[in-house]
Image (tube, rainbow, N blue to C red; front, top):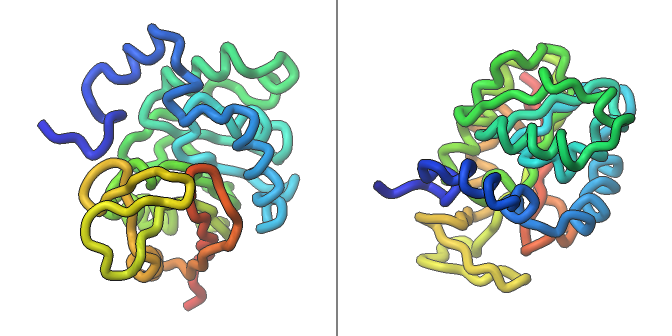
Length: 222
């Protein structure tokens, strides 16, 4: 059976966690990624009063920093076991006090179960680089009715030139594909999907690890 990414293969998380690879399978760059991404979140609207939803939080590479920075932090991932591994091994006691395990929610379908309606800001870093465009559309479409107070989501994708057929080599050397992992999209496709989901999106110029492109998406006004 063909899976959209290696993460969807049966037993992937179980084996990775047994092998102690909870950092590696979220892309490594354990210190570099927060150093780059955290200032961008503040620059593009995240504040200490926000209720943040970290979609695809993995082993809390960013979450370990974000939880104490905001009024409330919630995280989802396809594997709760992966998030719990990060909680157990990567958080100090003070951060654990700000992040109860009950706020780590398994969610492979972007349905956001158990997450409160109070969410005001969302992040999906290095999630849709692993998944087809249909999952980006699903994730955004489900956000709007679930979180009436949401004012912005930041997400990353790999982009390829308009009309690109077949693989594309990103600036950092990663080869991406239109039909398999790691996935890329054209900018126009991203903008169309976000608009169809009820958001107004724009790409940001920042250089991110592995050549990802960050987008902001705000709920479109009627």
